[in-house]
Every structure is written in C-alpha cells, then in structure tokens.
Amino acid sequence: MDNAADLARKAANLHAFIDQHLPQGRLTGALPDISADYVKLQEEVMWGGVWQVPGLDVTLRSVATIAAQCCNGWEFGLQHQIRVGLSLGMSPQKIKGIFLQLIFYAGIPATVSSLAQAQRVINEQPMWQREDSEPLKADWLESVAEKLERGRQIRSGSWGQQAAVNLESTLSHELTPETAALVEAYNFGEVWARGDLTPKERTVCILVALMCRGHMKQLREHIGYALELGMTRREICEVFSQAGWYRGWPYVEEALEQADAVFTEREI
Image (cartoon, rainbow, N blue to C red; front, side, top):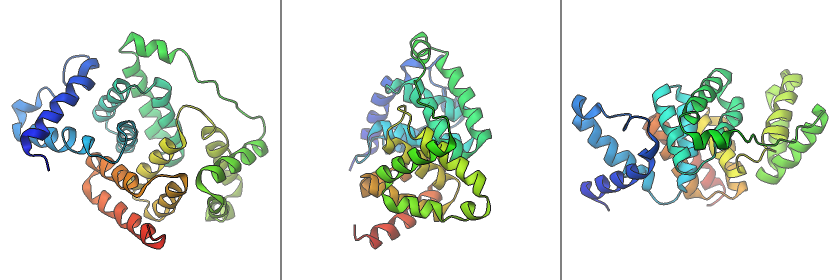
C-alpha cells in the first residue's frame, strides 16, 4: 500500500497533466493559505489516491465525477471537472452528452445549469471551440412509436430482456402512461441512440445519479442492468467510490449495500 509521500507524488504527476488548461493556475490556489491540512487531505486522498485506484478506466472516473457534480449543483466543482474531462481527451460533445443523459435522472434545472457551465469552459480554449463547432449528427426519428420501438431494441440489447419488462410494469406506466411513454421514447429511443457516449458511460451516469439522489430501490435494479451490460463487480463498486468523494461517503456505503445484495443474489 502506498505511503503519504507516494500519494502526494502521484497527485503531483496527475496535476501536471490535467492542470495544463486551467485559465489562471490551480482553481484551489488560495486553499494552502486557508487550510494546508485540507489541501493535504484533498491531494493525497482524492488526486493521488481515489483517482488512481485500479479497477476503473480514468475516462469512466471522469464521467462519474462530472455526473456527481451535476447532481450536486456546485458551479466551481463542475467547471473544474469538465476541464479535467476535456484534458483527458473527452470531446465537447461527450461532455454535453453526459448532461443530455442526465436530463431523465437529475432533472432540467441541474442539467441546464451544467450545460451552460460546460459551454463557458469549452469557450476558454480555441481547440475545444473547434471541436465543439462540429455537432454530433443525430438520427432523430419522426414518430413516438418509432422511438419506442428503437428504444426497446437498444434497452434489451444493452440491459437484457428483463429490463423492458421491469420498465413497462412501473407505476409511472400505470398512472401517467402518456408521460411515461414520452420519457421512455426519448430516453432510450433517442438519447441512447446517440454516438456521444458508450452504453457503459451512459450506465455510469445513471448509477451515479441514482446514488447521489438517494434512489436506492432504482439503483438496485440498475446495478443488475450494469452487470447485464458487462460491467464487472469491481467497476460498479469503483463507480460508487469515485462519485462518493464528491457526494459524500455515506452515499457510497448505501450504494454498496445495494450492490452487495445484487452480487449475492447472482452469486457473483
């Protein structure tokens, strides 16, 4: 296991890479004068530790972090993590795709605010602006019926046949059928059909949003869907631990409780 000096060194190496695009040096530049102890904790636990634990691809860690910060609604943290994602090679369209996916799980206010912050960050660098000037070509279908059918195919292909059964038996389908059909059609039939995020990245967004908002019943179902998609036990757990640094560790414990129950049921 690493000692404190190892963690500090790893943090410094990571900063050297991801801080290259910060507009005026480290965003937390004033923190050492406020609390050197806080900086030590942040550097060693977060940047030198959590971000570099094996078991989850760094891009998925970035996706999980951005999703958590969107749910949190803090402007400072989200803008910084968008810069991290762009520095890691994520395209502006992928960053925006995270918020399109989260419309259905974090809501309109959080995602509109996040998109506005993302655009401000993208506009900081000419290379990001150039990438952003080439919008993703989306194959929008004309009818809701077509969207529903494509959505069923995408959902079954990603999460298995049981996911369709579970979704269509929800209370929203029983009590608000028209709205439920629209959400299903546009979420799975349009957003999931886009090429900005992979199915695994979309599932990470959903897992994080459900954990951060405390929707544990739905989280348990989606842990099962993540397994159907091919995510490993370790990847799912690391998604929660990554997002938990930004949302709070008690949320991680509750999410892992749900994960452990699913793993036990499936004898994983």
